[in-house]
Image (cartoon, rainbow, N blue to C red; front, top):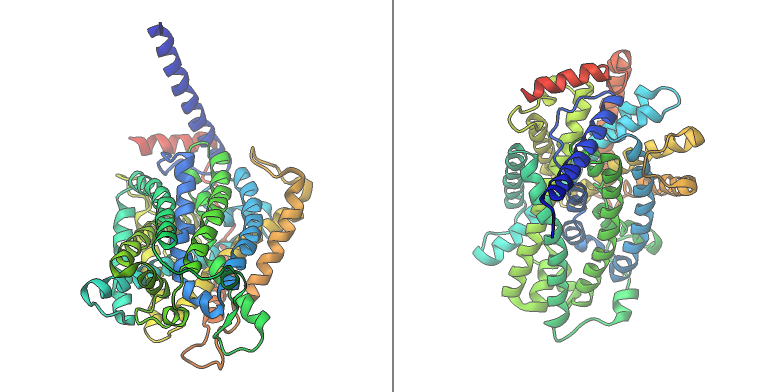
Length: 520
């Protein structure tokens, strides 16, 4: 029979253990120079859920599926995914090791400042700006994709025409909803992100199950694994195949969210790295299953590619399971995209909050404000939403704008990912490992990660259609150049005189005193 005193002692032991973890998290944050301003209420699973929700295979895979159909077709959709997935895993592993040593909301730009052997502030400045560009572009890409699919559903159900203007309107509404949800506090967002994980996994199972069981006809294995399609106007098949990798690489982005959420996560030095790696691994497996299921279910390739809805997966669903079934599957996808966009705004706002905390954005004092009721950076949330809207608006006059937004997100984020990894490689044995590390595999994995990033940075700035015209021009280099030019000029003219990298806010004792004031 259980002794009540033993039960009470066990409960106290669990509480003491949890308190010890929280104390260790706060102590480490103090050592890194920051106060515990944000509410540390997220579990390791919730941390993983944020990154997994942003990766969102039901968002990235499906919103760019039509792009993949035209740039390489089934062969590149099928084989590009595992190739890109394995290369992405090397990037994630290298980042996770650094995250374990420096679990802060600043993430990448803080790591760059700490790892740089010299000129730390400059490395930090440009890493932060690339990260900012990538984060805003990811939010724009995800929510614009949600606008595409929502418009396709509304056209099927209510005749709401799938036009660029209507899509931009829906895009704006979705961003506002995500801003409001993130304003209400991290606890609600964490709950919704936990739901998102199961929504994605069950959703993939339902969609693939329907596409396997319902259609009377499926494409052959030869079609799915070897059929190459080139509708770009270019005559070099290798070049077109490389362009087709964007589908997978855009989907497998945003997992740095686990790093940005570490100041709100318990046992952050372990939970953050695990969140990064597991979000990639789970997405890699589930995403390939999803892509194979959709590709085998194609009934009319040209009809889907030229669908009146502008959303090829929607036409594939209609052809495979009928209109009513397609509407149901679209609702699953739209729900996943909504969760994805919400998590993206969360991660983006934390990066903006951290970068502003160190004075690196115009109007930093305003963007760094914390809502005392919810302990969330409300101003940064709305900065993220408005910035994403401005990046998505060009779709009104440029039909290739969405592909450009996705390219911007990949390039911005992966340059920001690779800079700390490169600096960590240069440190060699001087790098101080955290509790989660790669051991002797650190260097080879880091080298592959940096090399892959260099390749895709060049690749996704290249033209996607031929002949090149004003209406199909890939404006990715322009967007990258504008942000990099602004950051570079500001650095040379002003910031290099005052930006010293991440600011240390005080001694551990001073930081603890600030935290006590926040609790009052």
